[in-house]
Image 1: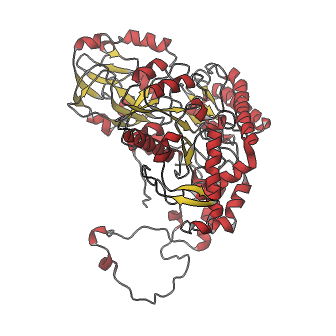
Image 2: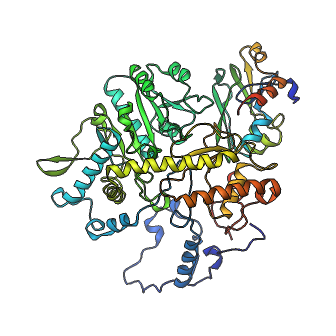
Image 3: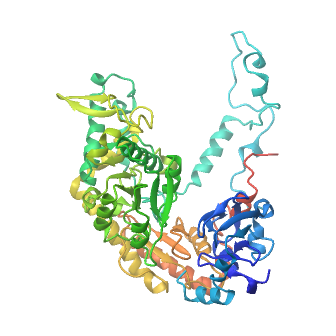
Length: 125
Length: 486
């Protein structure tokens, strides 16, 4: 996926126009090697910023939040089987789940790739 | 790991078929085939693979392994949040005297007055040091203390006819806090921190409602900072009908100086294997006594030790108690060691412990500050959290520096915790270390930082001198192999 097409959260998730969600390249680098991924159940309704997946590295376990409200439409079983995909292809094969957004306009309110880069530079962490 | 000298092979690798440690006598009772006594479905399909060694081989194997031990008795061990302080040897001597070592927990109270008095006194000491009304000494670890404290709080709310399923926990808390909440059947909700590491009060107050049973705070915080607004926070929590829980893992910065009960804490656990100098981890077992205010006392585990007409008794008749959380009176050997330590220190001694622990951490912080561009500002309590960001050479991370410290004979500080500090190193010197030890540690850190710039690969491939080189943690987590296979 082209990062330019993605929208980003301050908690380092990205969401594509089709509702696919993953974590940013910056996030995968920061948390280091991912060793375990816990995915939500398909069909689950989630609120914006609700924790709905867990990514665990040798450093710690991290909650992954829903970038917008909606329903979990599909999950990426491949990342559960091979968590290294999150590190190798954060914007591609390492996606976590796909959601049906309650309102696609919500996604537009999140940061663009450029805005996210600025956020990373300005944020203390 | 390939290409490394093996310090000590596995016992399996030294095994020879048929070799025996001791000769077994001929069996002189009738034998029954094993499948006559145990259902076939429970029997293993092939014999267990066990190493076959002679007694001297076994003795040498474990003696050699013991020589590889790294411990507080051999080296500086600045593992943040764990309070790896010296365990005075006199405590071990006392617990080994036959009058204690030979005690049986089922002896009637008439014949157990001495030990019951000690348990009663430990509870009183802890109550006075912490400003609480009562303690249960049963929980055998900090995390079990948390679980007990949460169950007590839940029973308290239920007794009042209130349904409060939520526990609020700051995101800088120990990971055991939310785990204990889940185990107690309640729901943990995270409260954010501000960038300076304090609880985000707006977020806390917004989440505080009639659903909240308790707020769990670590005081001082895992950043080693004291929360100056704690009394105001406690007031708001109480106004919402909730309780304030204090994770006492960091009590070594408060004991003798501040009584948590005076701050508005309703429930807390303390780790005797931290602040009260009993052995830690493998040297344990531990003990995580739970203290409460008067209103919560009826819900503490039974049995309690009570003094009635000059006689100590175990009391079971507490209708609202959550029941037992441990066999008998808890890990009594640990409690005796803690009692010896309390008597050794006295109230004044505890004050000095906190003062010196805080002084040592701030001394380290002052000396480390020029080395770390992103050092959090201000004074700390008993531990110093350093951000490795921007401090090391190209591509060198905190993990690498921690590994390199092993080559210099130091146990590595806690790393990557708390999560809110990037590339964190958490260093807790405790009150025991001399200025010389602290100075030598700082010089080592300085040398490693210089090396990370002049020879980054040396740091990135550390450790170089330990019995095994860098372990592949990622592969161990992704493909755990927990059994020996020839």
